[in-house]
Length: 117
Image 1 (cartoon, rainbow, N blue to C red):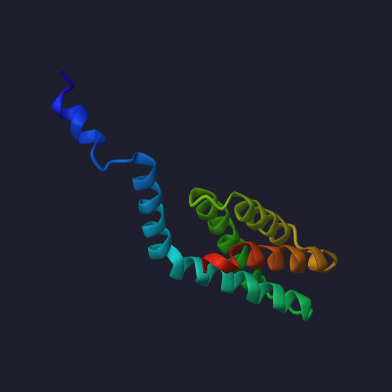
Image 2 (cartoon, rainbow, N blue to C red):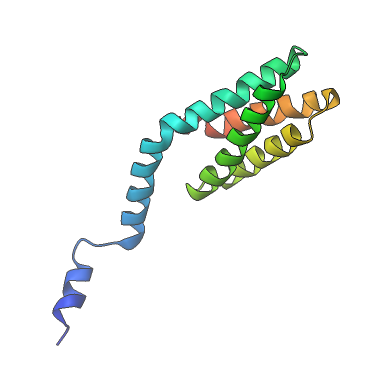
């Protein structure tokens, strides 16, 4: 005879579905801060492209990219997290010659996340 605990686990309970639903709820809750971080990165890339990336903006965008890299991976956006890591590295070692790569990675990050924002 099956145990009562086993019966209750089988009734309307799918751990994978529950985990996905929880992650989706968390993603929605963190979406404003994620968008804010993406905006900071975009602003820094635009400033770099215009030739006037200030140190404070660069540092703030580097920190935002670092947080994005971790959060995006946690929410299942592995490739976007890797791109955010690339942006973080470029901002950490920033030189004016790195602007084209920075622009490319920022555009790629936006494309990877566009349907989730």
